[in-house]
Length: 251
Ligand code: 9D3
Image 1 (cartoon, rainbow, N blue to C red):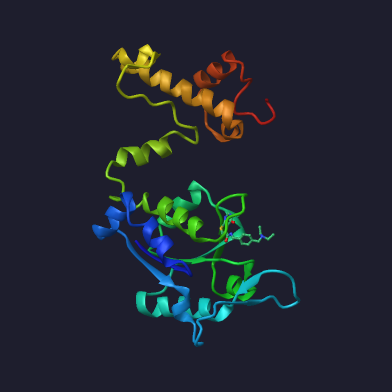
Image 2: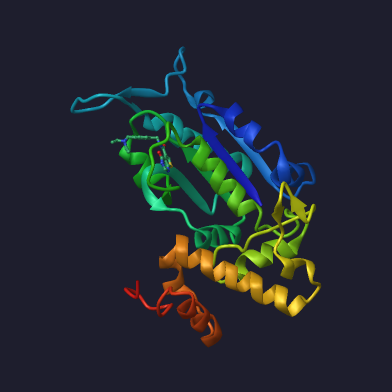
């Protein structure tokens, strides 16, 4: 899978993609990621990428020319992109479903915004989608770009060594994860639940499923409305006082 990331802070992206499973997958040739400095696509002596807003107001706006030039040069040198993502707080919130969809593409360009905004013609004529990572204000699109590249890359076969853990994420059917414990069985007086030490695999599976349901009901009840629950799972939630699960407005 091929990614091209365009930014005025390339070192921020490079350092974020150098380590962990993504760093290893790049070295192994599973991921072909090139980071581009937006200033290299300027044509003026001072490599200016921003300008004042037409109509006035505070803050600078990213100029269109360098972003158009970057996407065109990348297409010429690296082939046409299947998607051009513009990172923006006004974009559509990124979800795991988006990560799965983008994994089916071969080549993605990611454009990082900075300053107060980006010239609207980039959105209209270069970007194919505008993506946010959530409702909080960051200082630029670099961290969001890292989030997107990471979330998509780990779905590329072979990037995460243990395919089972990638599968487990999807098999949990939109529930939060259950608690995890490792040795020692007692730490500063805090014991690991007995069932996990029992060796009764059926009981362990049931405990994990119930703890995942409990956590989801407590922290993210809106996820339960979307989850396909069995009759047994619904009964468990009701017996724990969470009300009829899987129905909106039940809490
Ligand atoms: C009121 C105007 N601000 C919008 C909330 C201006 C503004 C703030 C922050 C414009 C750009 C930015 C920088 N943020 C991003 O580029 C960004 C972002 C984010 O801030 N939150 C979540 N997702 C993203 S994706 C890109």
